Length: 129
Image (cartoon, rainbow, N blue to C red):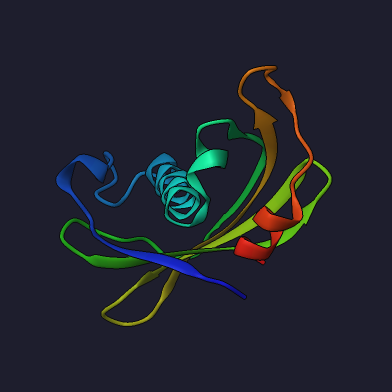
């Protein structure tokens, strides 16, 4: 499994009226780390000609987090077949290693010019699986 990770500090802007990180913020962090993973690993020729769109998100909220906490946002790809890819995420509080979120997204690989789904190449599959 080829994991990509990013450490973040929970900003005040992520806190909702209940005093902890808003659920939508966790989802945004998952999408952000997936995009960073793509741009860090994919050859430039693919970055300029292809992009990903979300088909489905599944997310489980396990524990809350609060302003100023250090979190680890991890992602990895488990499947890439045809035009679809399955990517998983785990968000953990670094201080106590508690899992805050487990999530999964099904993405579709799209060719920029035609705006149509594109087959995931072996080159891409090898980089991420």
